[in-house]
Length: 623
Image 1 (cartoon, rainbow, N blue to C red):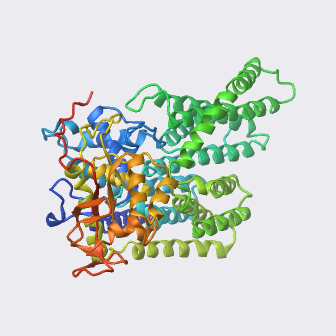
Image 2: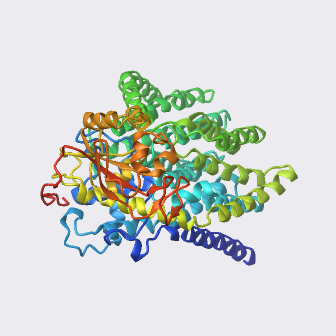
């Protein structure tokens, strides 16, 4: 009893510290009353993932359905989005559940912008705790019920709670598409680990295997629907389960569980396409889901072969097994061309949805390589093989993952748990030490940012909100299929922030085209590029050059570094400039000189109407 209380107290302490860490790390993103732009927002939304997630939630609340296309990101050409709509539907449901809905604003179905942000951004620490609990359960399933297994599960939960890579998307003030996906992946790893456990031939063991197969298939469908890269973990678990079928005594039960898992996953993946606020019939996400569903059907065929080959001598061959194998082969042959085309379409959309640059991190590569090498030592068990295959899949697909560092941290949590349960004494002693280093690193790297950089971020976010009054547009902001009269040019890495804060369209320009405009030194050429894209205004900020989105010294950068009294450069007329000026290091300065510029400036292209037309009220209501 005392040991149980001590274990519960330790886990409670880990979760409490994780919650406080996430809460403290996000307090810098709460705006003071003096920093709020027009009182519409109380949070500093300064990253693309959060801005895009909030935009989709707002449109979901306004229309009653998650948009798979959003013309504000493409200047009137409704290009489909590659992100899954399921997280936006979940977040919108959370707002409806916890929000007050007392505002008369019809565009958000009674909710204000500040209320939507407040409800969603405060849920980050809770999602982080949920992730730590799910990792703890998965580690316990991987290791068993021994005392060392409990220590390993504690270490895994601590790594998931305090590792900076997993702390960042689940802290206060940030909202990531993959947070819910990571929770589903952790539960999926637990289900795979339970399936890999040896089971008896008694009725209770058969019932447990059937229930685990159903649960694993449902979790696999949910995980892939929430977050497309979760398909990698489904493939890793399927490979581990297929390898476990090499044991003659356990092969029939595990093969049947694998068939059930994959068939349920294929069925569950098709459900979001048929019913719900995310239902759709076309688009890259729909193509990816169809490909994943068909792939699950195809992967069930090897398990059907295992069932046939595992027939004991003298046992009559069952017609049901033959019929199932024939049906799976026929479905694989019939749907393979469609699945291949859908997979190519969906994969191309996910790859080109944002630049590949920056996805591959050197430290992530080193961590994943070390994970694979350590996994080779532990591959003697099915659980070790599961972690090994997971790490190898993530290593091969890191350039396609949007947060490969989080994938490495999650796999490292399971690896540390396995090290605690290893036979070698030095491994058991090293794992808690590594977990402690992760905890210390989480506290150190989550320190508050510099006040000067915070002021620049507040000025940029507040300046983007000025687009609502300065850029003409008669189209409702909450219509995902409008035809905007004009748009504003921003770098591709700031498009979501401009759409969320400014509620104005950005032109449908490729990354290469924007790079050309950012590198040109001629104002006339920059003006011609804007006209060719249909843009009437351009946003300039010193941070664009600091991030590499704009060439330092080019025409676009000169608009950002223009002196305070400059009102016109070439064909560009300044219509807004943030009062605070910043240097090349983005730190706020009080006096202006040639080396500083406004934190954010908005320039209008000459020849366009100065007065914005009267903007009609949004007509959309929740269904």
